[in-house]
Image 1 (cartoon, rainbow, N blue to C red):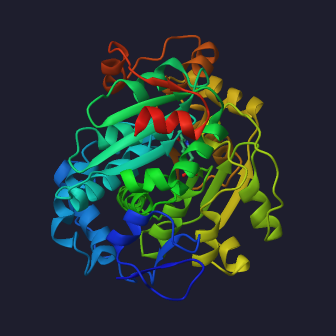
Image 2: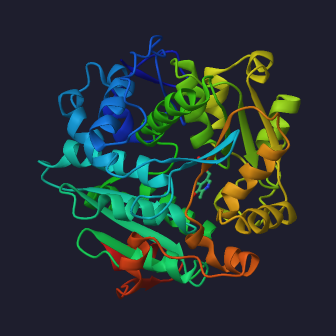
Length: 428
Ligand SMILES: *Cc1c(COP(=O)(O)O)cnc(C)c1O
C-alpha cells in the first residue's frame, strides 16, 4: 500500500514516510492510494475484551494499510503497545451505548492515536544518530497525550509548547511532569503564539541544522488509521448485542475521530448511519448542508477540545467521499450549544452516568435521532473537565488512576517569551 497527497494523483510515499513527514510536501494530507475492500472476518469472541482480542482486531484492520512497509513485520508489537487499555462499550439505555475511549494514560481518545504514532516513530528512529524532535503546540489536551505517548521512547524527543496560564492545572501537570525526553515550554502568549513558534522553528535554518524535526498533530495519518480499530471492535460487539448494525454518534472538532468511523464503515465494519455532533463551531454541519464552508472565527465553548473553526480533516473527507449526495446518504451532523451540553450532563448525572462536555454534545444529538441502536462515542473522562461537570452533577467526579498518579507529581517547565529567539536560546 502506497500513500499520496489529497492534492496529487501520485502515490509517492510509503506509510512510514508519510508518518514521518506528517504533512505532504504540497501541503495536502496523506491518504492511502485505495481503501482495502474486504475487512477479514472477525473472531466470535467479541464480548469479552482481553488484550489479545484487541490486538487480533487491530492486526486484521491495519495489516492491509501496512502491506509492504518496513514496519509491517513489527505491527503486532506496535498494536499491542497502542491498544494496551480497554475500550468498553457501556449499554446505558435499551437502544444506546457509550463507547468509552478514555481509559488510556491521559484519559481521552487521543491516547490511542498518539501511542500508535509513538510506537511507529520510535521504531523508525531508534538507531538514528540524532533523535527525531517532535514539536507540539497545544491548547491543552493534545500535548499531554503526545508527551505521555513518547515518554522514554528511544530515538525521539518531544518539545511541547503551551500558553502560560491558559491550560487547567490538571492539563498542565500532564504536560510538565514527564522529564527525560519530554521538555515543556510555557509560552508567555496564547495558543496562536505557540503555533507560530513551531512553524517558525520548522522554517529556521539553525533549527533545521541542529534538529531533525517532525510533528505529531492530529492530521498525521499515523494517528488516524489506528482510530478505525475501535470502531471495528465496537460495531461488532454492538451488532452481537442488538442483532443489527448500530448507528454511531461522534463528537467532532477537527474531524479525525469521525473520519476514522467513516473509513471503518468503508472497509466493511457493520456500521449504519454516522452522525457528527459539533459544538457551536459548526463547520461540518454547514459543509453537509451547503457543500462548502465559509471561514468563521472559532468560538469558545464548554467542549473546548472541539473549538475548531476549520477542521483540517475535511480535506480528507472530501477526498474519500467526493460526492455530497452519497455522503449525505449515511452521514449527518448537528451543532450543540453550551446550554444543551449543561442539560445533558445534569440529566445523565442524575442517573449516575457522568459525561464530559464533548460526550454531552454526542448525547444531545443522539436524543434527537431515531430510536435505533446507537453507539455514542465518549471521548474524554469527565474528571478532565471537573470545573464544568462537578457543579452540574453536584458531586465530586473520581479521578481515574492515571490522572491520580500525576496529581501528586511536581511539574517542570521552561518559561519563554513568544519569540523564536527566546525559544531557540532555551531549546537549542
Ligand atoms: C480532540 C477531541 C475531540 C474532537 O476530536 P476530532 O478528532 O478533533 O474531531 C473531542 N473530544 C475530546 C475530548 C477531544 O480531546
